[in-house]
Length: 296
Image 1 (cartoon, rainbow, N blue to C red):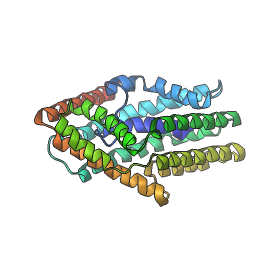
Image 2 (spheres, rainbow, N blue to C red):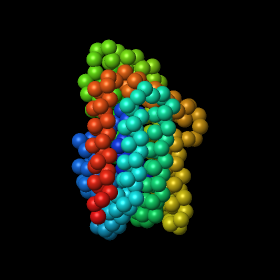
Image 3 (tube, helix red, strand yellow):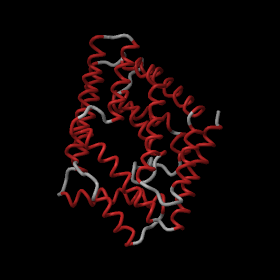
């Protein structure tokens, strides 16, 4: 659960560091707006999963505040530098491998956040009660049902259409409106990507079961803080790396490569005016990160 909560935060950070097609954007107009409400949103998100009790509340709020303080002071200017490189990158034709390097740079930064949060996550894991773990399990089931309704409906053509429309929402955020000819190029690249939503759901459920088993083991055996940190670190690494072998790892690798490929198509078919718009959007995020980093 803690990793699930942190996964939400990590994903949000990753979204702010990658371009359209590799990951979706955070659901706010600027980084500054989302970040300034980040502590409250993170607590709210976590509370939905475990129903934080009176004893846990001070621990959780203090832990979130410490993490945001550290993140603001040590990470945001680095994010601004990464986005500056990305702004320069998308002003010229790119190859998918270049975008994958940007993605990997962003993903490495996620591990820094995880490592910083591990002691507090371990402390919280050791306080979880059986009913709270059961609540997490029910929330996972609810999330999976929502996933089924959104992504397992229709035939392959319908699913490709839905995926393409979500991609275009993000592409248009960065670059503005696309012509019919541009959309046709992007649609072709989008449809060429691997698509197996059943396998994606199966992977989600596998990680969820692993998390529940881990939390129940912690609750039953009460291991040391260091042991819990090691368990959480291993779980987070497997989750973010999509490692473990088998068809799931092959699928995730193919999905990542396909996303980089379609992102390259979006960048390469953009007009000079669209590239200027993308640069301006990225500059807004850079300015926000710099302003947030200055805030004490």
